[in-house]
Amino acid sequence: MTAKARVHVLILGRVQGVAYRYFAEKYAMTLGITGWVRNLYDGSVEVLAEGNREDLDRFLARLKEGPRLAAVDGFDVTWEEFTGEFPEFQITF
Image 1 (cartoon, rainbow, N blue to C red):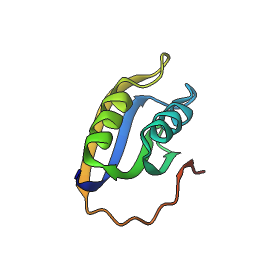
Image 2 (cartoon, helix red, strand yellow):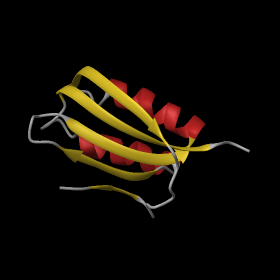
Image 3 (cartoon, one colour):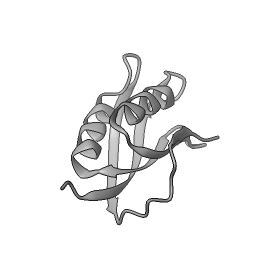
Image 4 (spheres, one colour):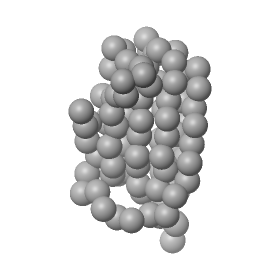
């Protein structure tokens, strides 16, 4: 059985205005990950996601790449305890 986990991610670089949130949502839904993604006022993107640890590792690898027009310059990851609080993955504003 795969362990469940929660990850909080801050992504820096050219990550707004390049469909980054939609990119994250697509891959989260593909992997069965729940949580949210949002733009921050400083130009970064924040993600809070829960799921199987292996799936979250795959998700993080995709987030580091980003969509074609993105340029990820910084990637801060904090692992947390799984809560199961999210029914789905969504873009928040």
